[in-house]
Image (tube, rainbow, N blue to C red; front, side, top):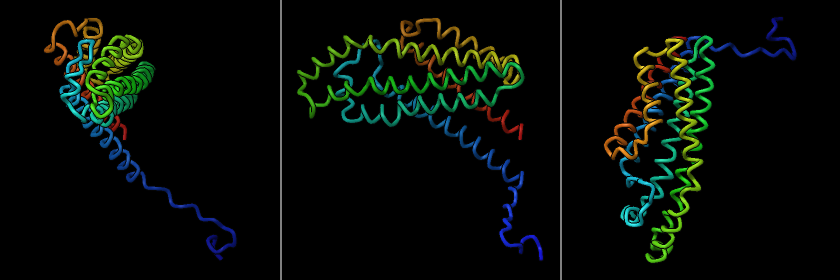
Length: 239
């Protein structure tokens, strides 16, 4: 009688072949990178679609967008920012190597949590303005009055918005320093990324005009995509 024929004997399932597990990891990593690119494209489209923000949300701007203002914030803008920063944080972890890896881990934590909270804050900010600009909810005169009230109290959101942006900037900065030390990204790219974070986090780009704001935003998107690309390459090289 063989072992398989003994009463009560449980035959453990055959171990999954190593090549199969490696292939699954590759698919997951590539899928995450594609998700990062899609989220970056979505949030970029949203950023250039929504009315420019100079510290005031205007009734006429939101009203002109009709019923699209809230759905675009809820289903595109907010998720785009949240997913892109979480995916970026994962790739920052994948770029960790050696003793400098602790910088990547700390940076990923800051960027990931900061990105989620930033996305939640800007999405929540849009809802009362969406209701105030909807003629089915409020007449125009009352809606404009509510806009004035809401704009007068936007400062209450500044700590959350600025705080999350600082957390993201510090997180990316720490992680880029980690990649510079561990050489998991090309040295010129790490240095350029560090310079970008320092310059655009320290300068009031909003006062430099729409062109500077747009350029800074596109550079940020390119930097996140580059982090994802080299994180993907590093992770695939380990399997």
